[in-house]
Each structure stands twice: as structure tokens, then as C-alpha cells.
Amino acid sequence: MSYRSSKPLSLLLLAFTLFLASACGRQGATAGKTWYCPMHPTYTSDRPGTCPICNMDLVEKDGHDHAAMGQPGSEAAGAEAPEATAAEAGHAVVQLTAESARLAGVRTAVATRERLVRRVRTVGTVLPDERRLYRVTTKISGWVEKLYVNYSGQFVEKGQPILAIYSPELLASQEEYLIARASAERFVHSQIPEVKKGGEDLVAAARRRLALLDVPEAFLAELEASGKARRTVDLLAPASGFVLSKEVLEGRSVEPGMELFTVNDLSHVWVEASFYEADAPWLAVGQAATLRSPYDRTRAVEGRISYIYPALDAATRTLRVRFDLANQGQRLKLGMYLDVEHQLDLGEAVLVPDSAVLGTGLRQLVFVETEPGTFMPREVEVGDRTEGRAQILAGLAAGERVAEKANFLLDSESRLRSAIAGAGTAATAAPDPHAGHGSRP
Image (cartoon, rainbow, N blue to C red; front, side):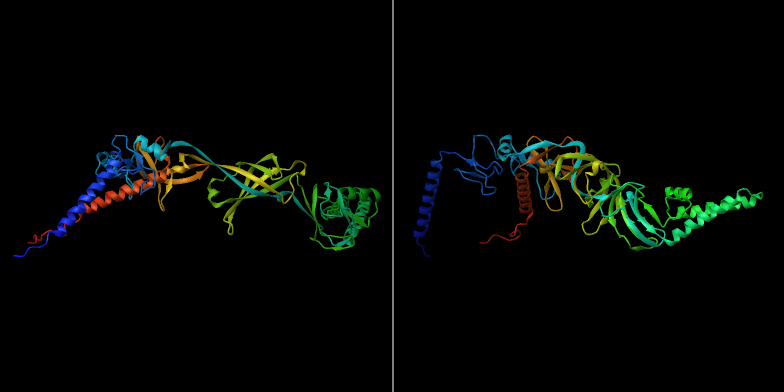
């Protein structure tokens, strides 16, 4: 039988003794005090510092049990077990003491049912009211002898002469009318009713021909009074307004249908504004909006939607909407930009602070405080978000309380606890790799 040296064993015992002595020295240095993480109470230290998980400052224990906060294996874990099945996948219920919640900055708010109104701002452009646009044309050929309207932008009154035209056709029609009148005067004393009526019909037809060629009524009255045909005939403005375009010069020949002037009545104008595609379902004819000029914010006018165009702009994915506005004093100029502020009524809905909703990729989560200090992660369906509030379509009822601040800390804690619980379950369910094997001799 051989004997091994006992020297290595003696060295090992000596090292272990020194380790215990140094550990006892460290514990003595802190006089038995312990520091813990408010968010991860199972992590403790014998000296001040920061938590290696969340970097929060460690807090000195005050003699109360801060470890039982829903961690796996603690007494609180048994309290949350019935609700654990209701937590979302990958998350676990979080339980905090009042002190831990205060230190973490957790703040809650109550979900309310209110009418949600979203304020939308866009830009509109002043355009002419197409129903008040007039094209001045002629039904005959001829030459422009004189222009009474000489430039674009000139204001004209309805019935005001705008040009004098010489037309052989008009001159011939005047002479035919005068001849018909002279013949009718001779037939007026005829004893034959048919002859008398034929003369009257001839005069009426000749006069109607001149009227259909846009000869003014005043001109016909003068023609009847004087009995002499005039070389030129004045064409009158069809409406009051500003001349937007002038396409004719003195001495120029004109043809039937040729556009001579465009006159626009600017007492009313259109304002066209574009809204994003997402706003389209909430727009309706008759809704009111406030319109302001960028250079005069103190003056605002109210306009109502008069028309919604049936197609989106393919390039900008916006929908055009038209407002009708009275333009007193022609303050609104064509092409001017206006700031449009419109309020979309989205109806009643459950509302929470926007900060209460956490986006986790494909899901939206809120942390519902089911009991004081107990926060359960719950998936919700979020609708519109506006002015710091989020519309909850499903997953939350009015009156429930949700965390609106420190949500990210709650989310990280919930994920960590879920991961720890999953790891513990996996370790329990894992088979013993040495099961079935005998012990080695």
C-alpha cells in the first residue's frame, strides 16, 4: 500500500481559511447592513452601488422584507399565480410596494370614456368660383372696331359695353329688320287678316334674329327709333366682375365662338384644401372649419365644406375638399394661401394618456393596475392618437387604471420575470442526464 503526501491538502485548507477570514472582514465593515434594488429586490449587496440589471441606485434595507415582490420562489409569487395566466405572452405580472413604485416613478391614470375630437391643420388655396366665371364670346364673324376694356384685372359692371364690333352679317340683319318693319306698316291697314299677320310675323322674326346674335335691347330700341342701321354694335359685359384674361385687340378679326374675355365675379370664392387619406372617413359636407390668412392671424372666417372630391391625389395620397367663402371687399385674392383648422369628431371612445401605450412591434400593451401595486400587462387595440391621448378600441374598459409613467421599467421588469419563470419551469421539467445509471465505485 502506498501513501500520498498530505501537503497539497494542507495548502487547500489554508487558502479556504483565509477566504473565510476576508469574507468575515467584509461583513464586519458594513456592520450587517444590506442594500437592494427597488426594481429587482432579489438582488442585494453588502455595500452601496448600482443594480447590474437596470442601473438603478441601490437602497439600504430598513428591516422590512422587500424581496417578496412577485419574484419566482417568493411568497408574493403565490399571490400572483392565479393572474399569471391572464398576462400576455412573454410578460409577467409585476408587483411593487408603495416605496418601490415611488422610487421607480410609476404614475397611473384612469381610462375614461369621452368624445374624441382631433384637430387637423392644413393649407388651402383661394380659387375662382367656377359658377361665377363668364366667357365673353361672339356668335358672328367681324372685326373689333373699339375696345372699352383694355387690360386684364379691370373691373366691369354687368351691362357695361366692352367692345364695338363691325360685322357685315349684323349690318345686313339690321337692314332686313328695317325693311320688315316698313312692309308691316303698309300691311297694317290691309283688309286681309292673313296679310296683316304675315307682316307682323316678319318683323318679329327679324327682330328675334338680331336678339339671338346678342344685339342689346337698348340698341334695338335705338334702331327702331332712328330707322337707320349702324355700322358697329356694342357687346355688353354678361356679369359684374374682374377681367381675368383678355384675348382680343382693336382691329383684330373675330370668329364665332372665339373667347374674347373671361370675367370672374369675386364676391364669392372657393378655397381648396387637401387632407390626408386617414382623415377621409371623418370628413362630411357641411362641417365647419376656421380659415386664417398667414399675414393676418387676427382675422378669421368660418367656412363650411361644400364639396368633397371623389378621388385621391395619387402622388400625395390626399383628398381635396372645397369651402365656399364670401369675399367682402375682395380681401381674398386668387392664388392666396389660407391656414385651415378643422376639427374631426371621432365619436365617443375609451381614452388613456398616449404615454400609457407601449408599442412592442406588432402589439400594443398597457399595464393595468388590477390591485394597488399589481400591474398586469394587457394587449389593446389602439385607434387614433391626438393631443396626448390614445383611443382604445378593444382590450380596456372605462374606469380601469393604467400606468402612464415608468412604463418602460415595468415592461423590462415584466419581461425579466417572465424569462426567469420560464427558465425555472424548463429546469424543473428537464430530465436527469444520469437517470438510470448506477453510481461509479
